[in-house]
Length: 303
Image (tube, rainbow, N blue to C red; front, top):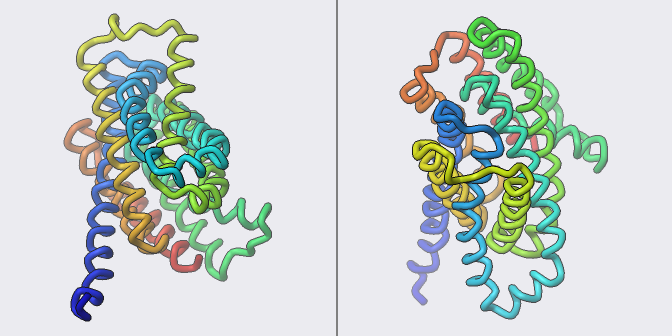
């Protein structure tokens, strides 16, 4: 292999990683907007989650079977599959359920900013349970982030009323559960690899969601066509595709670079919320978004 090909390979991987990460971020960021549209089409949390799982689960199973052609992947699955399944249900079922419930009470923009503060919970969990003391200035970054969210809450209280507090608590709980998931998943991903872990974790969460669908006696045949289309869109374009794009990006980028690409998420959500949901964007939203994004960037640099 020539020296030129050796030197350009890392650069090519980096560019691919950035592109994959940006695509994944954009697709994930559209999710709250589509969920709000699904609510307006007559859906509830069970219907939205069930449609999402029904459209995504077959693809995760197909990917899992494809990966398991390799004996090494099958060995990893036997050793660590149960860990990935438990962690996946925590992150992709419980956190998702709280997130979807929150969107019934708050705007898509506020939801995205609250979820976006999950690094602050990662810092707290690592500090309390793993004895990893946060770097100097991290606590100030966390404070700035929550000041930013306060600006959005102050606006939404006028538009949505006191139910904003209910939705905000659910979104914060979702961010906390997702932070716990991230801390627990770190070692499992290192042992299994991102793609196998994603397939098992998301697939396991999908199975639990379909069990909930049966328990709730939901019926796809009675759901409006618009709701079904929204649910399928959420399942394929806001769940399956971004999960694998981000997994591919993880294989090519450092965690810090990957996290920085996610900083466009709130802006993407705001853009689609304004255009598709007719949500307002005021100076309070602008200040709040800037503070939250700045806080997360500072946390990433400190860590």
